[in-house]
Every structure is written in structure tokens, then in C-alpha cells.
Picture 1 (cartoon, rainbow, N blue to C red):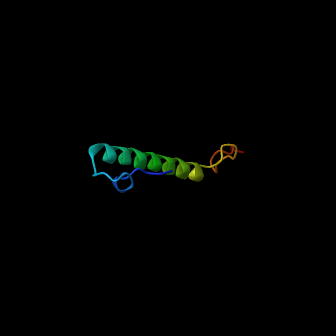
Picture 2 (picture 1 turned 120 degrees about the vertical axis):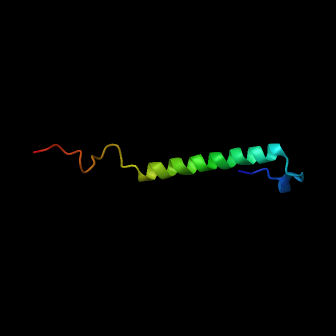
Picture 3 (picture 1 turned 45 degrees about the vertical axis):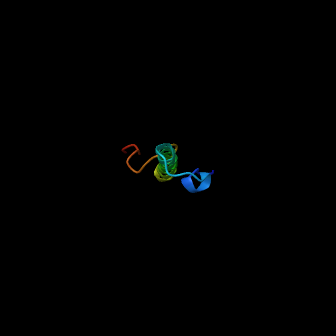
Length: 55
């Protein structure tokens, strides 16, 4: 994925380049958080330590 920064498109830093860069960085941050949550969450089919029935 290529990120269009002012050095790549050879223009000065305008408001739209800053805005698009912020959107792209935000999207990457959301994807990283989703991957992190999926790794830390226990599997759905495996019961947790407190989900076992009382005997």
C-alpha cells in the first residue's frame, strides 16, 4: 500500500494531504487494534475457567 505523502507527489503539505494521511493512519490503527483483540480473545468454542457447570 502506497501512502501519498508530500515528498511522493512533490507538492507542499496542504490540508488535503494532511487529512488523507490522518485517515490512512487511522485506518491502519483500527486494523492493528482488530488484530490485537482477535489474538487476545479466547476461542468461542473453548469454555473459560468460570464457564464450567458447578458439581
